[in-house]
Amino acid sequence: MKLIKEKAELIRRIQAKMKTDGRTIRQLAADTNLSKSQIHKLVVDEHPNVSLDHVLIVCQELRIPYELIYKP
Image (cartoon, helix red, strand yellow):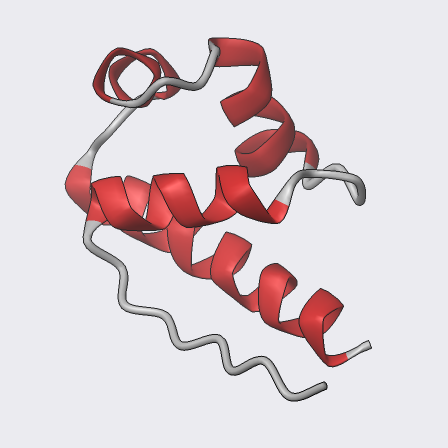
């Protein structure tokens, strides 16, 4: 459950960073290995099944710090 909340928080931070930087979905797709539809699902639709990998790739591109701690 905590991972879902953490992913949702990262998505909100991505949306805010894109607005402040003026980055578009097309620009992010060009800078990452993700397609425009994958980024659209993440940023606009906030699709619940968005891959955590995709979220982290966009965070790295936008230089958004994150900390995920795995505790089995």
